Length: 87
Image (cartoon, rainbow, N blue to C red; front, side, top):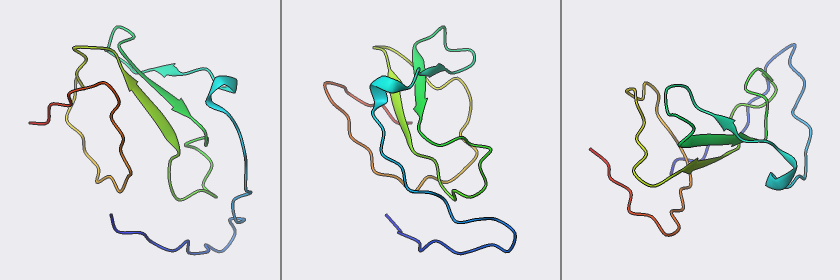
C-alpha cells in the first residue's frame, strides 16, 4: 500500500474526524447485482473534504462485480470466510 499524506486544497475545509458503527448505516446495494453486493459508506462520496472513501464492501456467495473497475485502489482488504477470485 502506498500511504499518502492529506494535502489541503484552497477553498475546501479539512475533513472532520468521526467515530461511527456500521450498524448505524444502511448498506447501499450496488447496481446490477441483484442485492448480492452492498457497500456501507461511512463518508459521502460527494464530500470533497475527504480525499478517500471509507467503506465496508459485502459480497454474498457467488457474487461478481458486473463491470470493469476503472480506478486504482489503495486499500486494506480483509476477507472472512471467503474465497476471493480475481481474474
